[in-house]
Image (cartoon, rainbow, N blue to C red):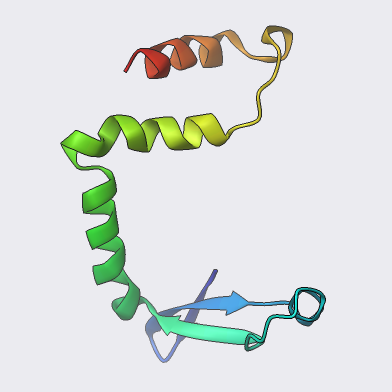
Length: 89
């Protein structure tokens, strides 16, 4: 989504390429505009749940696990140190 301002109001625009929609047989408007004021309450609620103390470890592990795995020769020492901390949590 891309930020967009109109009449001093913040919006987010989702641009959906026609080629992608056609190739995947998806009907989707080319552009969808959503006012920021309509997104913030749902986003705040999601963030409160995702980063709640009892879910914090899982929230950290999921994006970490989604990263491509590389060999130790390709990883900076700082990243290796952070990975050790994350995997201990």
